[in-house]
Amino acid sequence: MFAFRRGDIRVETVLACMPAMAICLAAGILFGRPDFGLVAASGAFSVGFGAFQRFTAVRAGPMIFAMIGMSVAAWVGSFSGSYLPLMILFSAMFGALCGGANAAGPAAWWITLQWAITFFVADAYPADMMGALGRAGLVFSGGLLQIALVTLVWALAGKSAILREHDGSDRWQDLFAVMGRRLTGHSDTLRIAIATAILAVATTLLTKTTQMPNGYWIPVTALIILKPQSDKTVERVVFRICGTVAGAGIATLIAALLRPDESLLAVLVVLLAGVAYSMQRSGYAAFVACVTACVAFLVALAGLPEIEVVKHRILATVIGGLLALVTAVCVEAWDRRAQRGAGPPAAEG
Image (cartoon, rainbow, N blue to C red; front, side, top):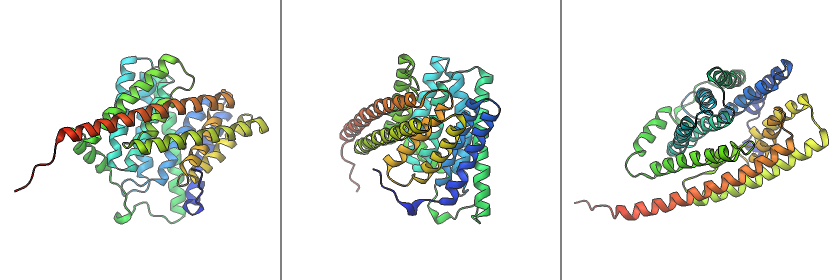
């Protein structure tokens, strides 16, 4: 769970992903709007993970796709947050898209997951049309700055912007071709997409009705954890809970020792973001611990005490993880029933 593999760290890319967050947070503090800096930094943080993905022959492809989709999701989520029918519709849409993208490979799943996460976070902060556009603009700005700085570092390091075809990169056409082919009839991909859509709607309604602080972490956690095989979901539930508790402990200890102000919070966010980028290919729980600690200090910039943030995140992780596990078990039972109903394949001759 907490394995650390030093050989998997791409040092130049990790370092390239950190300045964008620092600039966003510094600008927010300098102009007296740390909340704006937080939103832009969150966009830069999420887009930065795309630097470690491979999707299309363009090296920056995952970051570009993530940034564009996240900007749209931020606008849609913030605007629909005040309208229950729209909220349900878009929750189902992003949930189904995220579930169905599993069939098109890990990079496609990661990209659609960033869209869904951005939507659910923005949905928790409803605004009018202009306010929603403002949020989308901040996410876009942070993501664009991240892409610009990372590609600049790649260029200085002599890395080509175009990847070779044999490196195993997915193509953007695969996302639509594979999903279009599999989201028909009674396929397992269709079943997981439907189940994920239902899970997204159910968890969103749960957060709205209970008024749980930072409740958007419940649908976010559920979508991150859910996998087509229930045994994989069990593993991710255990690892994510352990990682969240560990990250919460780290954040609590640092907060108790340092009593950080805004400037120190921003420094901690950037440093922990760098550690999180480094730990992507290490143990899943170790990666989650780093992200949890980073997010705790990031949200603290909005004025919420770190201790409260980690409490909310632990509770949301447990609830979202258990709901994802129940969903995975139901999907597996649905698959078995569908396979029995299909009968043996017809003999050729």
